Image (cartoon, rainbow, N blue to C red; front, side, top):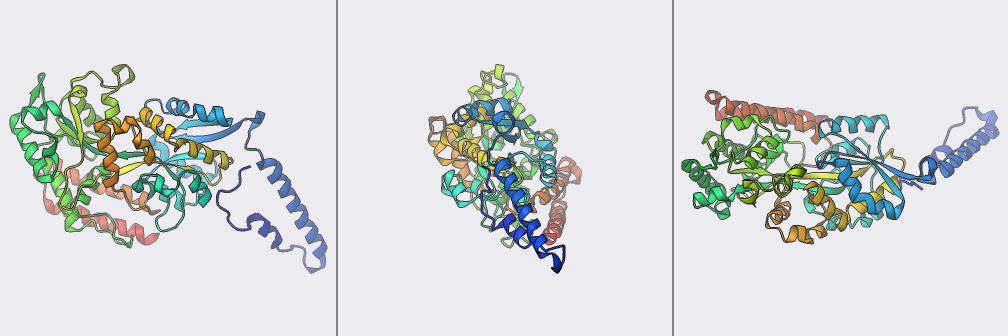
Length: 473
Protein backbone atom coordinates (compact mmCIF):
# COMPACT_ATOMS: atom_id res chain seq x y z
CA UNK A 1 0.00 0.00 0.00
CA UNK A 2 1.40 3.37 -1.00
CA UNK A 3 1.01 5.54 2.06
CA UNK A 4 2.66 8.98 2.17
CA UNK A 5 6.22 8.74 3.48
CA UNK A 6 5.60 11.64 5.85
CA UNK A 7 2.34 11.94 7.85
CA UNK A 8 0.73 15.24 6.90
CA UNK A 9 -2.08 15.66 9.43
CA UNK A 10 -5.61 14.34 9.15
CA UNK A 11 -5.72 15.13 5.44
CA UNK A 12 -8.75 14.03 3.48
CA UNK A 13 -10.60 12.64 6.50
CA UNK A 14 -10.59 16.05 8.20
CA UNK A 15 -11.78 17.61 4.94
CA UNK A 16 -14.94 15.54 4.97
CA UNK A 17 -15.72 16.29 8.62
CA UNK A 18 -15.60 20.06 8.04
CA UNK A 19 -17.29 20.07 4.59
CA UNK A 20 -19.95 22.81 4.79
CA UNK A 21 -23.56 21.78 4.11
CA UNK A 22 -24.80 23.20 0.79
CA UNK A 23 -28.39 22.44 1.73
CA UNK A 24 -29.01 24.97 4.53
CA UNK A 25 -30.20 24.41 8.07
CA UNK A 26 -33.33 22.55 7.09
CA UNK A 27 -31.42 19.67 5.52
CA UNK A 28 -28.89 18.68 8.18
CA UNK A 29 -29.77 15.01 7.98
CA UNK A 30 -29.38 14.98 4.23
CA UNK A 31 -26.05 16.76 4.53
CA UNK A 32 -24.84 14.19 7.06
CA UNK A 33 -25.95 11.39 4.76
CA UNK A 34 -24.12 12.94 1.78
CA UNK A 35 -20.94 13.34 3.84
CA UNK A 36 -21.13 9.75 5.03
CA UNK A 37 -21.74 8.45 1.52
CA UNK A 38 -18.86 10.44 0.03
CA UNK A 39 -16.56 9.26 2.82
CA UNK A 40 -17.65 5.67 2.17
CA UNK A 41 -16.84 6.04 -1.54
CA UNK A 42 -13.45 7.48 -0.68
CA UNK A 43 -12.67 4.56 1.62
CA UNK A 44 -13.65 2.07 -1.09
CA UNK A 45 -11.38 3.81 -3.61
CA UNK A 46 -8.54 4.08 -1.10
CA UNK A 47 -8.69 0.47 0.08
CA UNK A 48 -9.24 -1.18 -3.28
CA UNK A 49 -7.42 1.31 -5.50
CA UNK A 50 -4.31 1.95 -3.42
CA UNK A 51 -3.76 -1.19 -1.39
CA UNK A 52 -1.84 -3.23 -3.95
CA UNK A 53 1.19 -1.55 -5.54
CA UNK A 54 0.43 -3.37 -8.77
CA UNK A 55 -0.65 -2.74 -12.32
CA UNK A 56 -2.59 -4.91 -14.73
CA UNK A 57 -1.77 -8.56 -14.41
CA UNK A 58 -0.63 -8.21 -10.80
CA UNK A 59 2.85 -6.93 -11.70
CA UNK A 60 4.39 -4.34 -9.37
CA UNK A 61 5.99 -1.62 -11.49
CA UNK A 62 7.92 1.49 -10.53
CA UNK A 63 8.25 4.11 -13.25
CA UNK A 64 11.73 5.69 -13.12
CA UNK A 65 13.25 8.53 -15.12
CA UNK A 66 17.02 8.73 -15.38
CA UNK A 67 19.52 10.77 -17.37
CA UNK A 68 22.21 9.21 -19.62
CA UNK A 69 24.80 8.52 -16.91
CA UNK A 70 26.60 5.94 -19.05
CA UNK A 71 26.88 4.74 -22.64
CA UNK A 72 23.91 2.43 -22.08
CA UNK A 73 21.81 4.38 -19.54
CA UNK A 74 18.87 1.98 -19.49
CA UNK A 75 20.73 -1.30 -19.95
CA UNK A 76 23.43 -0.53 -17.37
CA UNK A 77 20.87 0.37 -14.72
CA UNK A 78 18.69 -2.62 -15.58
CA UNK A 79 21.67 -4.91 -14.96
CA UNK A 80 22.31 -3.32 -11.57
CA UNK A 81 18.63 -3.67 -10.63
CA UNK A 82 18.26 -7.28 -11.78
CA UNK A 83 18.95 -8.86 -8.33
CA UNK A 84 16.53 -6.39 -6.72
CA UNK A 85 13.75 -7.24 -9.16
CA UNK A 86 14.32 -10.98 -8.71
CA UNK A 87 14.19 -10.69 -4.92
CA UNK A 88 11.26 -8.27 -4.53
CA UNK A 89 9.11 -8.91 -7.58
CA UNK A 90 9.14 -5.16 -8.24
CA UNK A 91 9.77 -4.27 -11.88
CA UNK A 92 11.52 -0.96 -12.53
CA UNK A 93 10.49 0.57 -15.86
CA UNK A 94 13.32 2.93 -16.83
CA UNK A 95 13.00 5.88 -19.18
CA UNK A 96 16.12 7.79 -20.22
CA UNK A 97 15.69 11.56 -20.46
CA UNK A 98 18.41 13.61 -22.15
CA UNK A 99 20.10 16.14 -19.86
CA UNK A 100 19.29 18.97 -22.25
CA UNK A 101 15.56 18.26 -22.03
CA UNK A 102 15.40 16.97 -18.47
CA UNK A 103 14.75 20.24 -16.62
CA UNK A 104 11.84 21.18 -18.88
CA UNK A 105 10.39 17.65 -18.89
CA UNK A 106 10.58 17.24 -15.12
CA UNK A 107 9.15 20.67 -14.25
CA UNK A 108 6.36 20.25 -16.81
CA UNK A 109 5.51 16.84 -15.39
CA UNK A 110 5.54 18.26 -11.86
CA UNK A 111 2.92 20.85 -12.76
CA UNK A 112 0.79 18.57 -14.95
CA UNK A 113 0.74 15.60 -12.59
CA UNK A 114 1.94 13.20 -15.28
CA UNK A 115 4.92 12.06 -13.23
CA UNK A 116 7.00 8.92 -12.76
CA UNK A 117 7.23 7.31 -9.34
CA UNK A 118 10.97 7.91 -9.07
CA UNK A 119 13.17 10.49 -10.76
CA UNK A 120 16.86 11.29 -11.00
CA UNK A 121 17.57 14.96 -10.31
CA UNK A 122 20.81 16.83 -10.76
CA UNK A 123 22.01 17.75 -7.28
CA UNK A 124 21.66 21.49 -7.98
CA UNK A 125 18.04 20.98 -9.10
CA UNK A 126 16.62 19.35 -5.98
CA UNK A 127 15.89 22.53 -4.03
CA UNK A 128 14.06 24.10 -6.99
CA UNK A 129 11.88 21.04 -7.67
CA UNK A 130 11.25 20.57 -3.95
CA UNK A 131 10.30 24.24 -3.74
CA UNK A 132 7.56 23.57 -6.30
CA UNK A 133 6.03 21.04 -3.92
CA UNK A 134 6.59 18.28 -6.48
CA UNK A 135 8.63 15.89 -4.32
CA UNK A 136 7.61 13.62 -1.47
CA UNK A 137 9.08 14.69 1.86
CA UNK A 138 10.80 11.69 3.40
CA UNK A 139 9.96 10.70 6.95
CA UNK A 140 12.64 10.09 9.60
CA UNK A 141 11.90 6.38 9.26
CA UNK A 142 12.45 6.48 5.49
CA UNK A 143 15.71 8.40 5.94
CA UNK A 144 16.91 5.93 8.57
CA UNK A 145 16.09 3.03 6.24
CA UNK A 146 18.75 4.22 3.76
CA UNK A 147 21.35 4.78 6.47
CA UNK A 148 20.74 8.39 7.49
CA UNK A 149 22.79 11.50 6.78
CA UNK A 150 26.05 10.20 8.23
CA UNK A 151 26.13 7.32 5.74
CA UNK A 152 26.53 9.67 2.75
CA UNK A 153 29.13 12.05 1.37
CA UNK A 154 28.48 15.19 3.47
CA UNK A 155 28.43 17.72 0.62
CA UNK A 156 26.08 15.45 -1.35
CA UNK A 157 23.69 15.24 1.61
CA UNK A 158 23.52 19.05 1.71
CA UNK A 159 21.71 18.92 -1.66
CA UNK A 160 18.81 16.75 -0.44
CA UNK A 161 16.26 19.52 -0.04
CA UNK A 162 15.77 23.20 0.62
CA UNK A 163 18.45 24.32 3.08
CA UNK A 164 17.31 25.19 6.63
CA UNK A 165 13.84 23.73 5.93
CA UNK A 166 14.47 20.60 7.97
CA UNK A 167 12.92 18.52 5.18
CA UNK A 168 14.63 15.87 3.08
CA UNK A 169 13.18 15.45 -0.41
CA UNK A 170 15.83 13.35 -2.17
CA UNK A 171 18.61 10.88 -1.44
CA UNK A 172 22.13 11.15 -2.96
CA UNK A 173 22.76 8.49 -5.59
CA UNK A 174 25.91 9.30 -7.60
CA UNK A 175 28.56 11.95 -7.05
CA UNK A 176 30.66 13.96 -9.49
CA UNK A 177 33.86 15.78 -8.53
CA UNK A 178 36.62 17.29 -10.62
CA UNK A 179 40.38 16.91 -10.51
CA UNK A 180 43.43 17.56 -12.71
CA UNK A 181 44.42 14.95 -15.31
CA UNK A 182 48.12 14.84 -16.25
CA UNK A 183 50.13 13.34 -19.08
CA UNK A 184 52.94 11.85 -16.99
CA UNK A 185 55.21 11.36 -20.01
CA UNK A 186 55.03 15.08 -20.82
CA UNK A 187 55.81 16.01 -17.21
CA UNK A 188 58.86 13.75 -17.17
CA UNK A 189 60.27 15.51 -20.22
CA UNK A 190 60.31 18.74 -18.20
CA UNK A 191 61.36 17.23 -14.87
CA UNK A 192 57.93 17.81 -13.34
CA UNK A 193 55.84 15.64 -11.05
CA UNK A 194 52.46 15.64 -9.34
CA UNK A 195 53.84 17.65 -6.39
CA UNK A 196 54.54 20.54 -8.75
CA UNK A 197 50.79 21.03 -9.23
CA UNK A 198 50.11 21.57 -5.53
CA UNK A 199 49.57 25.35 -5.43
CA UNK A 200 48.50 28.14 -7.74
CA UNK A 201 52.06 29.45 -7.89
CA UNK A 202 53.72 26.09 -8.59
CA UNK A 203 50.99 25.22 -11.10
CA UNK A 204 51.79 28.33 -13.14
CA UNK A 205 55.51 27.62 -12.97
CA UNK A 206 54.84 24.11 -14.27
CA UNK A 207 52.68 25.40 -17.12
CA UNK A 208 55.44 27.80 -18.13
CA UNK A 209 57.98 24.99 -18.20
CA UNK A 210 55.71 22.92 -20.43
CA UNK A 211 55.10 25.90 -22.67
CA UNK A 212 58.81 26.73 -22.96
CA UNK A 213 59.68 23.08 -23.65
CA UNK A 214 57.28 23.05 -26.61
CA UNK A 215 56.41 19.38 -26.06
CA UNK A 216 55.88 17.10 -29.06
CA UNK A 217 55.09 13.40 -28.54
CA UNK A 218 54.69 11.07 -31.53
CA UNK A 219 54.53 14.05 -33.88
CA UNK A 220 51.72 15.54 -31.81
CA UNK A 221 52.34 19.10 -30.50
CA UNK A 222 51.05 19.28 -26.93
CA UNK A 223 49.58 22.42 -25.36
CA UNK A 224 50.28 22.75 -21.61
CA UNK A 225 46.60 22.95 -20.59
CA UNK A 226 43.13 22.53 -22.02
CA UNK A 227 40.06 24.28 -20.61
CA UNK A 228 36.64 24.93 -22.11
CA UNK A 229 34.93 28.30 -22.51
CA UNK A 230 31.41 29.62 -22.78
CA UNK A 231 30.15 26.83 -25.05
CA UNK A 232 30.38 24.32 -22.22
CA UNK A 233 27.26 23.29 -20.33
CA UNK A 234 29.20 23.45 -17.05
CA UNK A 235 30.75 26.90 -17.43
CA UNK A 236 29.71 27.75 -13.84
CA UNK A 237 31.12 24.51 -12.43
CA UNK A 238 34.44 25.21 -14.16
CA UNK A 239 34.79 28.69 -12.61
CA UNK A 240 33.41 27.90 -9.14
CA UNK A 241 36.53 26.19 -7.68
CA UNK A 242 38.73 29.17 -8.54
CA UNK A 243 36.23 31.57 -6.98
CA UNK A 244 36.10 29.50 -3.79
CA UNK A 245 39.87 29.01 -3.63
CA UNK A 246 40.35 32.79 -3.74
CA UNK A 247 37.94 33.21 -0.82
CA UNK A 248 34.92 34.27 -2.89
CA UNK A 249 31.41 32.89 -3.17
CA UNK A 250 28.15 33.41 -5.01
CA UNK A 251 25.75 34.37 -2.21
CA UNK A 252 26.13 35.72 1.31
CA UNK A 253 24.90 33.69 4.28
CA UNK A 254 21.56 35.53 4.27
CA UNK A 255 20.90 34.11 0.76
CA UNK A 256 19.51 37.52 -0.24
CA UNK A 257 22.78 39.21 -1.14
CA UNK A 258 24.90 38.32 -4.16
CA UNK A 259 28.62 38.81 -3.53
CA UNK A 260 29.95 38.24 -7.04
CA UNK A 261 31.26 41.80 -7.09
CA UNK A 262 33.79 41.09 -4.31
CA UNK A 263 37.52 41.41 -4.85
CA UNK A 264 37.93 37.72 -3.94
CA UNK A 265 35.61 36.58 -6.73
CA UNK A 266 37.46 38.74 -9.24
CA UNK A 267 40.81 37.41 -8.01
CA UNK A 268 39.73 33.81 -8.61
CA UNK A 269 38.33 34.52 -12.05
CA UNK A 270 41.34 36.66 -13.00
CA UNK A 271 43.73 33.82 -12.09
CA UNK A 272 41.77 31.34 -14.20
CA UNK A 273 41.62 33.75 -17.14
CA UNK A 274 45.37 34.38 -16.83
CA UNK A 275 46.00 30.73 -17.73
CA UNK A 276 44.66 31.61 -21.16
CA UNK A 277 46.12 35.12 -21.31
CA UNK A 278 49.60 33.69 -20.63
CA UNK A 279 49.18 31.37 -23.65
CA UNK A 280 49.15 28.14 -21.64
CA UNK A 281 45.73 27.36 -23.14
CA UNK A 282 45.28 27.71 -26.92
CA UNK A 283 42.64 30.38 -27.53
CA UNK A 284 40.65 28.05 -29.80
CA UNK A 285 39.99 25.75 -26.84
CA UNK A 286 37.58 28.34 -25.48
CA UNK A 287 35.19 27.42 -28.30
CA UNK A 288 35.12 23.79 -27.12
CA UNK A 289 33.12 21.95 -24.48
CA UNK A 290 34.52 19.58 -21.86
CA UNK A 291 33.91 16.48 -23.99
CA UNK A 292 35.95 17.99 -26.82
CA UNK A 293 38.77 19.04 -24.47
CA UNK A 294 38.72 15.50 -23.08
CA UNK A 295 39.11 14.16 -26.60
CA UNK A 296 42.12 16.44 -27.10
CA UNK A 297 43.72 15.12 -23.92
CA UNK A 298 43.12 11.54 -25.00
CA UNK A 299 44.65 12.21 -28.41
CA UNK A 300 47.71 13.92 -26.92
CA UNK A 301 46.90 17.52 -27.91
CA UNK A 302 47.15 18.86 -24.35
CA UNK A 303 49.16 17.82 -21.30
CA UNK A 304 46.61 18.61 -18.61
CA UNK A 305 42.91 19.33 -18.16
CA UNK A 306 40.21 19.21 -15.46
CA UNK A 307 37.49 16.57 -15.51
CA UNK A 308 35.51 14.08 -13.46
CA UNK A 309 36.04 10.41 -12.48
CA UNK A 310 34.33 9.08 -15.61
CA UNK A 311 37.48 9.98 -17.59
CA UNK A 312 39.34 7.30 -15.61
CA UNK A 313 36.77 4.83 -16.89
CA UNK A 314 37.23 6.10 -20.46
CA UNK A 315 41.00 5.66 -20.29
CA UNK A 316 40.71 2.15 -18.86
CA UNK A 317 37.87 0.88 -21.08
CA UNK A 318 38.54 -1.02 -24.35
CA UNK A 319 38.07 0.86 -27.59
CA UNK A 320 35.41 -1.68 -28.59
CA UNK A 321 33.33 -0.33 -25.68
CA UNK A 322 33.91 3.31 -26.52
CA UNK A 323 37.02 3.76 -24.37
CA UNK A 324 40.62 4.78 -25.00
CA UNK A 325 42.39 1.80 -23.44
CA UNK A 326 45.65 1.03 -25.21
CA UNK A 327 46.21 4.61 -26.35
CA UNK A 328 49.36 6.46 -25.38
CA UNK A 329 47.32 8.65 -23.04
CA UNK A 330 45.89 5.61 -21.24
CA UNK A 331 49.43 4.36 -20.55
CA UNK A 332 50.75 7.72 -19.36
CA UNK A 333 48.19 9.50 -17.23
CA UNK A 334 47.73 10.43 -13.60
CA UNK A 335 45.25 12.41 -11.52
CA UNK A 336 45.88 15.01 -8.79
CA UNK A 337 43.67 17.41 -6.90
CA UNK A 338 43.12 21.04 -7.84
CA UNK A 339 46.08 23.36 -7.15
CA UNK A 340 45.58 24.91 -3.72
CA UNK A 341 44.56 28.57 -3.80
CA UNK A 342 45.13 31.41 -1.30
CA UNK A 343 42.12 30.30 0.76
CA UNK A 344 42.35 26.55 0.40
CA UNK A 345 41.74 23.69 -2.02
CA UNK A 346 38.23 23.24 -3.39
CA UNK A 347 36.50 21.48 -6.22
CA UNK A 348 32.92 21.51 -7.38
CA UNK A 349 30.97 18.47 -6.21
CA UNK A 350 27.83 17.67 -8.14
CA UNK A 351 26.07 14.48 -9.06
CA UNK A 352 22.50 13.26 -8.88
CA UNK A 353 19.90 12.40 -6.28
CA UNK A 354 16.87 10.14 -6.36
CA UNK A 355 13.49 11.61 -5.46
CA UNK A 356 9.97 10.23 -5.13
CA UNK A 357 7.36 12.29 -6.92
CA UNK A 358 4.61 13.56 -4.67
CA UNK A 359 1.96 12.52 -7.18
CA UNK A 360 3.61 9.16 -7.88
CA UNK A 361 1.41 6.10 -7.47
CA UNK A 362 3.87 3.63 -5.96
CA UNK A 363 5.81 5.45 -3.27
CA UNK A 364 6.62 2.52 -1.00
CA UNK A 365 8.07 0.51 -3.87
CA UNK A 366 9.94 3.60 -5.09
CA UNK A 367 11.54 3.91 -1.66
CA UNK A 368 12.54 0.25 -1.86
CA UNK A 369 14.33 1.00 -5.16
CA UNK A 370 16.19 3.89 -3.53
CA UNK A 371 17.22 1.67 -0.61
CA UNK A 372 18.65 -0.87 -3.03
CA UNK A 373 20.43 1.61 -5.30
CA UNK A 374 22.11 3.24 -2.29
CA UNK A 375 23.26 -0.08 -0.83
CA UNK A 376 27.00 -0.75 -1.02
CA UNK A 377 26.87 -3.53 -3.69
CA UNK A 378 24.64 -1.49 -6.00
CA UNK A 379 26.66 1.68 -5.42
CA UNK A 380 29.89 -0.06 -6.42
CA UNK A 381 28.38 -1.80 -9.44
CA UNK A 382 26.76 1.35 -10.75
CA UNK A 383 29.99 3.31 -10.24
CA UNK A 384 31.75 0.71 -12.39
CA UNK A 385 29.09 1.02 -15.08
CA UNK A 386 28.81 4.81 -15.12
CA UNK A 387 32.23 6.03 -14.01
CA UNK A 388 30.66 8.31 -11.40
CA UNK A 389 31.49 8.15 -7.69
CA UNK A 390 29.22 6.53 -5.12
CA UNK A 391 27.29 8.75 -2.74
CA UNK A 392 27.41 6.19 0.09
CA UNK A 393 30.59 6.36 2.15
CA UNK A 394 30.96 2.62 2.76
CA UNK A 395 31.24 2.00 -0.99
CA UNK A 396 34.62 3.76 -1.06
CA UNK A 397 36.13 0.91 0.96
CA UNK A 398 35.67 -1.40 -2.03
CA UNK A 399 39.01 -2.28 -3.74
CA UNK A 400 37.72 -0.64 -6.93
CA UNK A 401 38.31 2.70 -5.18
CA UNK A 402 40.64 1.86 -2.31
CA UNK A 403 43.29 0.18 -4.49
CA UNK A 404 43.27 2.57 -7.44
CA UNK A 405 45.41 5.70 -6.86
CA UNK A 406 43.56 7.71 -9.50
CA UNK A 407 40.10 6.94 -8.16
CA UNK A 408 41.39 7.60 -4.64
CA UNK A 409 42.12 11.21 -5.70
CA UNK A 410 38.41 11.66 -6.41
CA UNK A 411 37.48 9.99 -3.14
CA UNK A 412 39.59 12.61 -1.36
CA UNK A 413 38.16 15.40 -3.52
CA UNK A 414 34.59 14.89 -2.36
CA UNK A 415 35.67 15.80 1.16
CA UNK A 416 37.22 19.14 0.22
CA UNK A 417 34.58 19.90 -2.39
CA UNK A 418 31.76 22.41 -2.26
CA UNK A 419 28.44 22.93 -4.00
CA UNK A 420 25.95 25.74 -4.45
CA UNK A 421 23.33 26.98 -1.97
CA UNK A 422 20.34 24.63 -1.83
CA UNK A 423 17.70 27.29 -2.37
CA UNK A 424 14.62 27.04 -4.64
CA UNK A 425 15.72 30.00 -6.78
CA UNK A 426 19.10 28.50 -7.73
CA UNK A 427 17.58 27.01 -10.87
CA UNK A 428 16.71 30.54 -12.01
CA UNK A 429 20.14 31.90 -11.12
CA UNK A 430 22.19 29.48 -13.20
CA UNK A 431 21.06 30.89 -16.60
CA UNK A 432 21.99 34.39 -15.40
CA UNK A 433 25.44 33.26 -14.31
CA UNK A 434 25.99 31.22 -17.47
CA UNK A 435 25.17 34.24 -19.64
CA UNK A 436 27.38 36.68 -17.72
CA UNK A 437 30.31 34.26 -17.47
CA UNK A 438 29.94 33.59 -21.20
CA UNK A 439 30.25 37.29 -21.98
CA UNK A 440 33.43 37.38 -19.89
CA UNK A 441 34.89 34.61 -22.06
CA UNK A 442 33.98 36.67 -25.13
CA UNK A 443 36.24 39.41 -23.82
CA UNK A 444 39.05 36.90 -23.37
CA UNK A 445 38.74 35.41 -26.85
CA UNK A 446 38.53 38.86 -28.45
CA UNK A 447 42.14 39.70 -27.51
CA UNK A 448 42.14 43.42 -28.13
CA UNK A 449 38.84 43.86 -26.26
CA UNK A 450 40.08 42.32 -23.05
CA UNK A 451 39.93 44.67 -20.09
CA UNK A 452 39.75 43.63 -16.41
CA UNK A 453 37.21 46.39 -15.81
CA UNK A 454 34.86 44.76 -18.29
CA UNK A 455 35.06 41.55 -16.28
CA UNK A 456 34.19 43.46 -13.11
CA UNK A 457 31.28 45.12 -14.89
CA UNK A 458 29.83 41.72 -15.85
CA UNK A 459 30.12 40.61 -12.23
CA UNK A 460 28.26 43.74 -11.08
CA UNK A 461 25.53 43.11 -13.64
CA UNK A 462 25.29 39.48 -12.55
CA UNK A 463 24.93 40.64 -8.94
CA UNK A 464 22.09 42.99 -9.88
CA UNK A 465 20.19 40.35 -11.84
CA UNK A 466 20.68 37.67 -9.17
CA UNK A 467 19.43 39.95 -6.40
CA UNK A 468 16.35 40.85 -8.46
CA UNK A 469 15.49 37.15 -8.65
CA UNK A 470 16.20 36.58 -4.97
CA UNK A 471 13.95 39.52 -4.03
CA UNK A 472 11.01 37.91 -5.80
CA UNK A 473 11.23 34.61 -3.96
